[in-house]
Length: 349
Ligand SMILES: C[S@@+](CC[C@H](N)C(=O)[O-])C[C@H]1O[C@@H](n2cnc3c(N)ncnc32)[C@H](O)[C@@H]1O
Image 1 (cartoon, rainbow, N blue to C red):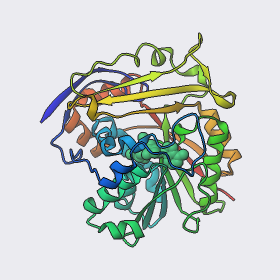
Image 2: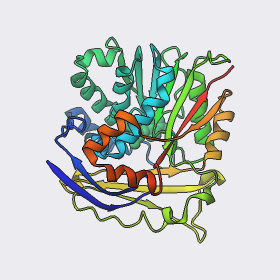
Image 3: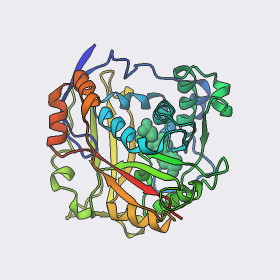
């Protein structure tokens, strides 16, 4: 089954035109809905801090979230998370923060981790992660929930997590976590919990953080004007689309977020060929690189800090092009460029 997406541009997903093969096993159509999950929808986690956004916004969209991984940009995302974690993954004890439905928790095991603990603030996402993982990794739900299958999921807030499972992780991954911090203080709390859970040690002997977040820009003013205005507001997808809206802009296209940071609150909604009811909508935050770097240092991350170049090459590119077409990736890299950045930071002493 094939369908087409046209005229979709966004800061998060610069997708000019694409053709997506939904019968591909890479993008399974199945989503998982459990009764306990339905019961939990629209409820708030009681142990999380009050924030300007709803910390558990993902409860309601958990059953549909995996649809988002069907877009071709996922090839770029996955290849770059794989490459960024590759030097550290062999036999690593991994903590996967903001694990969502466990897409990367399962990948990290496949890529060589000895065990993975997935943590997410949303109970709904954790429910889906547990049920999806038991079927896709041939584990029983019991093995997933007690960790005896080397994969374990638990509810937790990265801002208040503390040390879990004895800490001392070799690697902490966080794909689309940091962009839920609404200000420097929340970002610093996330990094503080990250540094507490990583093995310490200089000279490459300590643990490493690999985070994927929104398109890196040095300062808030430097997000291209067209990203804010021309390309994101209007999306008209024939069958599958994404609307990315930068909110509350002032005359200079900036908005001061809480805590005095410059950056943007961003509302994202998707729809699929099944209609809007099959799509997901959520709010996230786009902060400049300097805030990530300041928060990492204040949060106790003392080692080497690096933003990686995002690319898609070799066999991974060929596989992606076979599915979504060469043109898609030419335009993806040739236009506004990748919609995300990858930050690698060593814990240090
Ligand atoms: C876009 S999803 C990404 C999920 C997964 N990493 C992936 O790439 O498929 C973002 C996830 O971050 C989680 N999240 C947001 N704020 C969080 C926090 N403070 N602590 C832990 N998880 C959080 C949400 O519940 C959601 O599951």
